[in-house]
Structure formats: C-alpha cells, structure tokens
Amino acid sequence: MHEIVECGIREQRNLLEPEALALLSEYGLPVPRHELVKTPGQAFAAAKRIGYPVVLKVVSGAIVHKSEIGGVRTGLGGEEALKSAWEEVSRAVDSAGERSSLEGFLLCEQAPPGPECIIGIVKDPQFGHAIMFGLGGIFVELIKDVAFRVLPITRADAAELVKETKSYKLLSGIRGQKAKDIEAVIDCLMKTAALVQDNPAIAEIDINPIVVFERGAMVLDARILL
Image 1 (tube, helix red, strand yellow):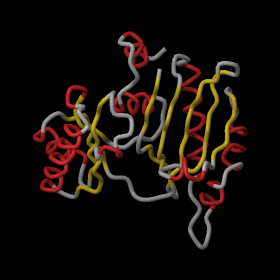
Image 2 (image 1 turned 120 degrees about the horizontal axis):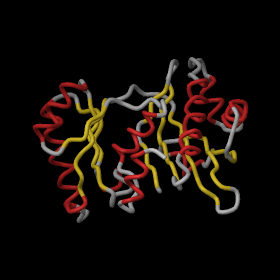
Image 3 (image 1 turned 180 degrees about the vertical axis):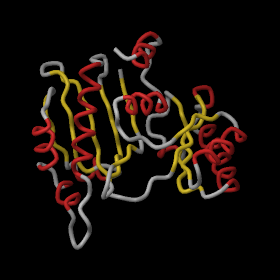
Image 4 (image 1 turned 90 degrees about the horizontal axis):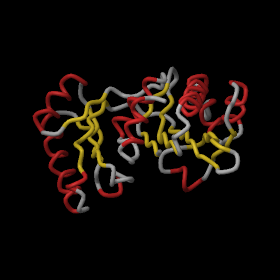
C-alpha cells in the first residue's frame, strides 16, 4: 500500500487534494503542475514557476465541494488577479466557518478547454470495487451519463465502458469538431484501476473533471476517500 494512503489511514482521514494528485501522478495519470501554498508570497512565487494563467483552490479536509462556498478561482492572468482571488477565497473560507480546517491553497496551471469527463471508483460491500466513467463537470448529476464495471478490468473492458456512454460520441467528434484522445481516457481508466487494486483501503475516488484534448488528457480535480 502506498505511503500516502498509509498516512491517511494512520491519521483516520481522507486524502487532501494535493495528496490525491500526487498519488494519481505516481500511477501515471496526467495532473496539472501545482503547488500547495500558505501565504500570498508563496502563491506569487509558485505562479511564476508554473506560469500564468493559474487556478487557486482552497485545501481543507472539511470542505468537500469547494466551488459551492466560493473556494475556487480560475483564469488568473497575473499577480493582481491572484492577489484579489486570494482575498476573495480567504473571505469565503471565513464565511463558511472553516478557517480552522484550512491546510492552505492549491495553485494549479490553467488547462485548455475540452470535453469534461468523470472517472470514479466506488466500493460495494458485495461486489467490491467498481470503476465508473461518464460525462463530467456539472453535468454528471444532471444528465447521469455514466457506466460501471466491476474490477479488475482489461483494456477491452475499459474501451467498452467508454463506448457505452454518450460521452463517446462527444469524444469521437461531432458537428465538425476534431476527435479527442480516447486512448488517453482508456489509459487513465486502467491506471486508476491499478491504483485501487494496489490500495484496497480506498473506498471512493472522484476524478471530476478530467478534460480530454486531441492529444492527451488532464485531471483537473480529484477526491480520494479511505
């Protein structure tokens, strides 16, 4: 079992987003350049290393849905925008009464636009772990375009999982749009499955969204529950 998961188990908590991204990265999933920062000065220095535009997100084990409390700012194109975003997100944390749970802020590179999908893991008491794929972003709850497979899976299983969803038509290219990298999505499914098989203490993974490009993909947000 990976040391990040072991640490969460010892401390009887779920993984923070920087830990989740680190774990996904070690299994080969594409994650954005990112740094955990705790002061505005650290944020400005990290943004110079990462390169503008950037995304600022609150990191707290007590805040599950960051966007709902105003804990995310995207498309920050310079130091002034980042400074304003820092102040706004800090006020949002205070308004939510979660200052004591704040671990810092996650500064990430801004990904190019593309179709947003979801990869998930759920643990059923009877069947064990199952992997989910579908249309992601804000549409996952609205449209519920998802399909499941019980683990373990083969690459052929992963390909069929993608083809069962409406997302497949979107990724294949519609109305003159160029096809997206479906093989990259299948790779991500297989790597997520391997992660869970190596770390059975994981109860749930929510990779939402993972944005898919003409070549490659990128995880934009990840949550891992133990």
